[in-house]
Image 1 (cartoon, rainbow, N blue to C red):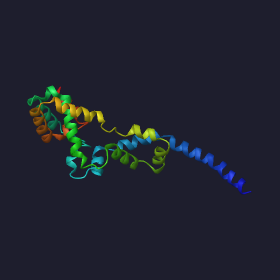
Image 2 (cartoon, rainbow, N blue to C red):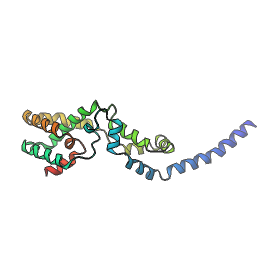
Image 3 (cartoon, rainbow, N blue to C red):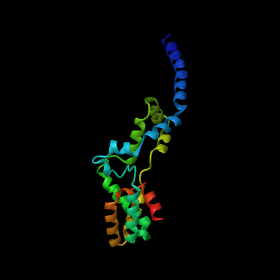
Image 4 (tube, rainbow, N blue to C red):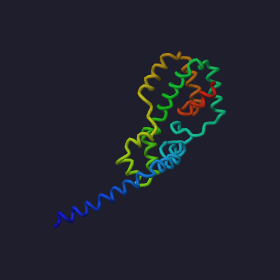
Length: 190
């Protein structure tokens, strides 16, 4: 008799679980989109950056156009316009090193944590249990080891005096040289 009762509970539970799965899967993309729109660089900096928020280069939000133009002008005046890819790689490396102490977690872990915070319990469960690949698509990619190797090779190609000038420019204008803000810098250099 107990086995029959267990089978009845399992038989009744399977449709309930299927309906629950279907209801959580329907509209997940829309809910994820809304959650992503609430994950802002300012919120990420506020939540994860240790220290003065104005100095956060990992989650740089608004970059002043004047600062970007000034950085671009300084780079051209220093003769760094011939070394733009190398200069950006070096600036990326310096930025990562500067932010390492202020951010104990990788950028992907910070973004994922904030994104999950914006979702309901059911959606978090769905992503963790079923949508693991989906979560990987949503989270920013960590800088690759190839980029670190490129920065190392860039340091070999850029003359020491040019690196010193670039370091001075980076110290004066770190935000425009931080990734992804460097895209605006490339526009200004054109």
